[in-house]
Image (cartoon, rainbow, N blue to C red; front, side, top):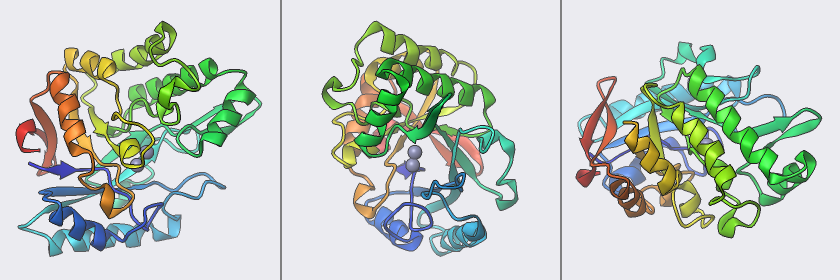
Length: 279
Ligand SMILES: [Zn+2]
Ligand SMILES: [Zn+2]
């Protein structure tokens, strides 16, 4: 089953409408498409759905669900940030929308005395954050500390882009992803996944944007997840139609390299396994 549960549209920071994305997904051979608009953000952070548009968003995805019934499964989801106390997936803020699933993600890191910044925005933002934090080590450790908190707090189905902090770090330009210190920070968060019943995504978003030549998470982390029995899904993190299906073969190859032979798919409200070969 060819499924993608990580899709953005003009309701948040995506470039195309849900209807156009559904059309493109079907043309790219998808059997299932989940919409995961960014949840509304704290003031000053513009990329989420505007609170007053939430109901229209849900209504439009439900409409498409009917349009595509029998051809492609459409699911209503949301990507919810970990940025307590303002927002956390477990706080139930969007329960009234009757979402089919949610993605929990960390994009923002902040420190005492340092304004919160995104690790995956323009590289200059991350570099300024690193300078303000007094070094990259403090930033990646804080990123994984927050990711660990998100995992323990729960309230979501899919854990978004596990090692997003590496997005702007091609060629190890800001920190060494092979270093013991970096891997220890990441693996500490991986260890928290054990028995959590979360699905981790293999996410090709940075590849589709030409930012990295490998998906999230890196092979070393994925192998450890596999050893712990963590389930996976393959995600485009699509912000436009061209991202749908882009670099899908790289995601599949990574899953295979880590020893996976199946992926988790959403069927009648439950995450069930489907062969990787048909994904
Ligand atoms: Zn994200
Ligand atoms: Zn996303």
